[in-house]
Length: 129
Image 1 (cartoon, rainbow, N blue to C red):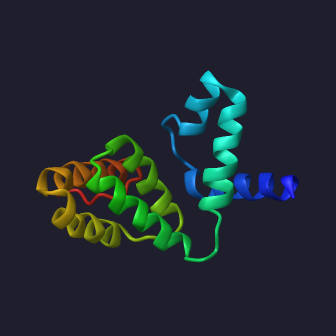
Image 2: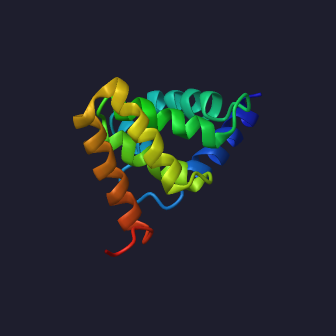
Image 3: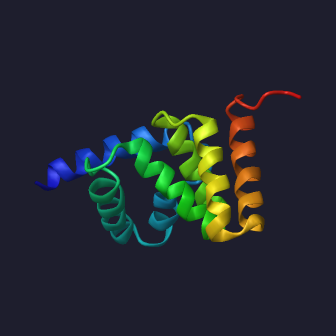
């Protein structure tokens, strides 16, 4: 069971966070407490994010919406990368961010859109205008 959980955690982390250059939460946690970092990663990535009740695309759009409303741009950047990695289109991510304005306000939406633009620019997906 534990070996299966470790494999699910690794597989999900690779799927979501491939190509992310910034420090990942796991690396930050590990710098302070390696055992707790492992436990958090196994739960968050291996159990929650690896669940197959909803598709990874839906799960990441939910994360984008929540992080937009909470105005957490650093974590949002990570999950925008993950959303793109699992197949979400930039237009879908932008629409979720716009929808979040109703619940989190326009300032939070603006921060999230700037974060989305930054990620798209990093990935070469932002059209030059």
